[in-house]
Structures are given as C-alpha cells and as structure tokens.
Length: 272
Image (cartoon, rainbow, N blue to C red; front, side, top):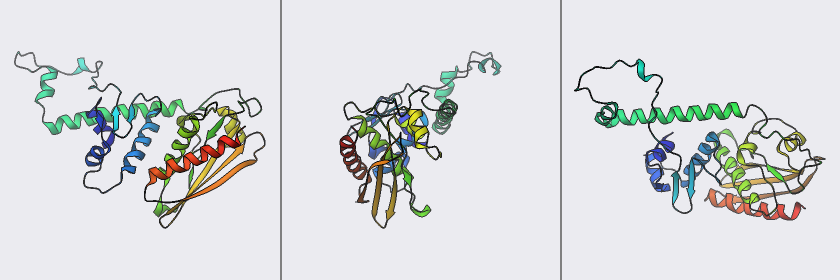
C-alpha cells in the first residue's frame, strides 16, 4: 500500500528504486528485490500486464512510473445528502480541501487509493471465478508451439519463505519464453489463476489452449537456492525435459534472469 501510494502521489513521474526504498521501506534495511516483488504483487492484484501496462510501467534502469490517471474520487450520488451552510464565507469543496492539514489530506488520499485498490481487487476476483481463458482448444488441437508456465512452488521451510522469489521466477520465465518467435505463452494473470489449485495438467492445458506445461519448484539450503524446472507434454503427461539450477542468493534478480534465460534456451530446442 505504501508503494502504491508513493507511485500514485507522483503519477506520471519516474520514481527510482532508491526513492521507493526510502519512502515505502523507511527505517527498514531491504534490498531492491523487495521493490521488484512488491511491484509484481501489485500487478497481479490489478491484473496489469508488465508488457502492456495500464497502471505501472517499468522504465529500464531508472525505476517505475504510474501511468494510470490519478485524481481525487468524488461520490456524486452522496454529495446532495451532505448538509451545506448557505453563507458566502463558506469555502467551496476545492478550497476546503486546500485548507486541510497535510496529515488530513494524506489520510484522505490514502483512503481514496485504498478504496480504488479494493474495488479493483474485488472486480478481478469476481472476473476470475470461472476459468481464466474459455477456449475449446484441447491438447490435441492446441498450437504445437505453445506452453503455459505454472506458478513455481516454494518448497522452503516457513522460516525461509521464498514465495515472492518463486512468483518472480514464474513471471521472468513467462517474459523470456514469450520472446521466442512463434511460441505462444499465456500471460501471468492466466497462469497465476492456477496457483494453489489441484488441477490435472491436461485440464490446465485445455483451459489455456497449450500443448505444453512448464512447472517447477524453489528450494533453499544455507545461502544457496535450487530452482528445478520441468516441461510436461499435456496430451500424455510425460516429462520431456527437466533440469535443476543452483545459484547463490547474493542477487536474486540476477538469479531469476540467468535461470529464465537458460530455461528458455533449453525449451526452444525441446519444443518442436
């Protein structure tokens, strides 16, 4: 919420990662990875596509920008019920807002942004109650070069929770695979619909209209992370490719980028 508020207050401007760390994580020592994961979470809640954003845009090597229109929300239906004082000295609503204390104005702004986020989240939840993509495609007639990336599982212990890293790994893989010419990859919103659900691979493939499904897991031991990935052919459920990647945890963003790149290269050769 603090991150969203920070971006909304500076809508249209590029806000650097350092500025976001200072304002949203004031007094807490965290790495830039916290910003990346928080932005990824906001995008999932808002249903925002990082490639074609309508809310939060990534500005490479500079930061993030709120590209949605941000303005105070006024309940026009409720306005007539508010009693008014018919005196010339009474300030108009804009003047009243201008004369409010900074703390009250910030609270009002926070309430407005929170209401908008809640409405968006509820709308998204209702929209996703059914299947994310209603298609008649099956594993038999799906495009030959099509793969869905399912949310990677966090197999670390509760004390070493890496769910945000697993979600970031999933999004990075979707991004890298979608760059392969001719390969069709459902977006993050469709893939994350299946997070935590026990559904057969064949049914997932039918719902998303793909021939292959890529899933995997994240494990941690000391300062090392192990990412396991496997490619499953939907029509028979057989694993046609699998590999594991061990990396130090010194730079999680670099780890996600490197592993996603290697997986993309391997799948490019495996999916014919």
